Image 1 (tube, rainbow, N blue to C red):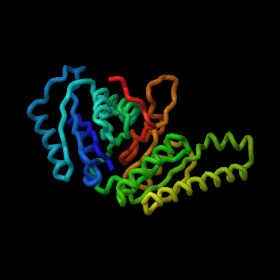
Image 2: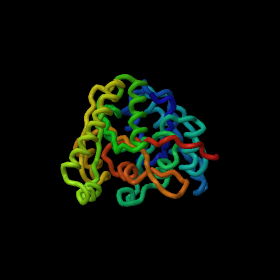
Image 3: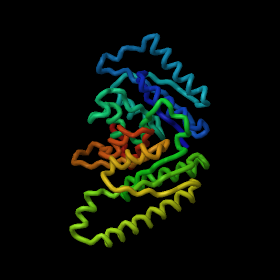
Image 4: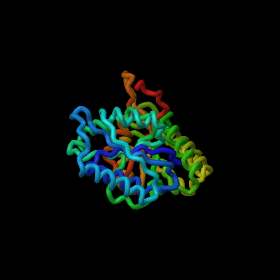
Amino acid sequence: MFKHILVATDLRPRSEEILCGLGSMDPGLVGRITLLHVLDERSNGHPLDEQKQEQLAMQKARLESRGFSVDVAVKKGVPFDLIVHEAQVGEASLVVIGRGDSPRWKSRIMGETVLRVLELSPCPVLVCHGEGAQNPLFGDVVLGIDFSNESHHALQTLKKLAKGAPGAIRKVTLLHVHEQRNIDLLLKLVNREQIDQIIALERERLEEFVESLKAAGIPDVSVRMRTGKPVDEILADVEENGPTLAVLGAQGQGRSEMYRIGTTAFRVAQMATCGVLVIPLSRPALPF
């Protein structure tokens, strides 16, 4: 399923989220793990002291005790820059990172490293959450679907994962949110019956996605539709139904050539009570 996972650890308390998130994965689905710690050159990048070295060795041992093949790398640089670089040159199939433990995290500002990795990573990024993760990571997945190219790419990626590791993904819920703002605007132009017809067509298309996921080997696939603001409804759905993982396509927009994660994926990665897998469209190699 994942030939090479790059795990970014800063050896702070947030690292426990990462270890628990990885611990809920089946080692048989992972080729190898690189446990990367970056010495931040902006704060002199001092070498690890003895305590930090022991902590890193313990993290490696914990993953190995679960059956993973683990290498350790300690390098100096700007954390987000080096993580993205290592993912690129190491041909990582997944980057795993913690969401951060800053008190600003749940307000409006995401830790710089997490945000920039989400924006720039050439491969999917798993933002881990929760020290108590016990159930298999892919046991109960909610996939956000809005019919965009990005969400379709996320759907195709999930199908590919299912085909590559039969039985690993047990349950998927396709979650589609109708924006209340859009419905209110449509009601000024058409009647409610016409809107209901549009929604019925969307459900038909979602049911087609359901069948394609079942054909890929996922036994339990269903659809949920909600109305409201996408961020709020996805977070509420996660809170109410308790999935093990939320999957979203990165789909920001902007005039800048810098990559964008998108408001919905950004806020869900911040606030969800489960791990969040953000899947980007193909991105060109960065000029490192």
